[in-house]
Length: 234
Image 1 (tube, one colour):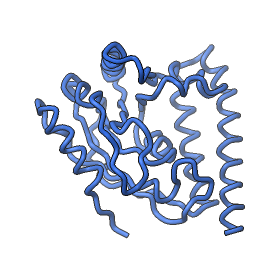
Image 2 (image 1 turned 180 degrees about the vertical axis):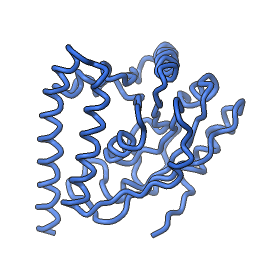
Image 3 (image 1 turned 90 degrees about the vertical axis):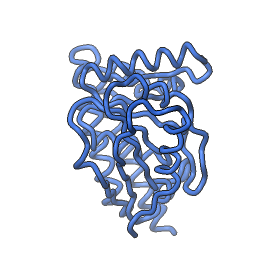
Image 4 (image 1 turned 180 degrees about the horizontal axis):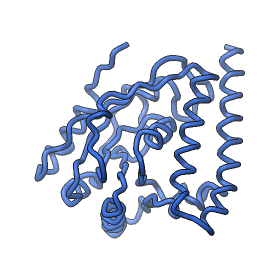
């Protein structure tokens, strides 16, 4: 247990220190070359996953990424851990995350989220916030980016079921690009608000795109099966 604590402490120092350095660098980029902010984020994501593997022996296995179509797509991703963000930063060439507006208040880092092309949503904004999310997502897709949305809205512990929000339904109906469900068990390795990390493999599985024109219940039904009925190789 003591060794796991030390390893987790080293990882947190590496992740936090690199995040601080890249945030300061990002503030400069925001002024002179904002188009490179997403590149800096990808570098940070790769470094953090490397540090997680070296310090805590947590590895990542992704299934189905070879079938990911080029260009703009919507990823409807299960969300269990902060590790999910790092993984999508490294898998996708130009991700744009749909995220809660409160994250933009984080010192330094938060000021870079929207300039990097992410989509901040006021969770208490009702229909107006939903429309804004759809418009911003369409703009990101038109620019060739990959929109990552977490239909559960927050991290959900392994084995639990979250309420799937209607934003993914609106996005699936108007996106005009493949909408790909993605399941994960990252919470088994890096739980929400847990300091210690559990050694082993964190899995991500991408599924075939949702069929276009599906009804709300059908879309949510497919996501429910992908998120909560997935078995991984051990």
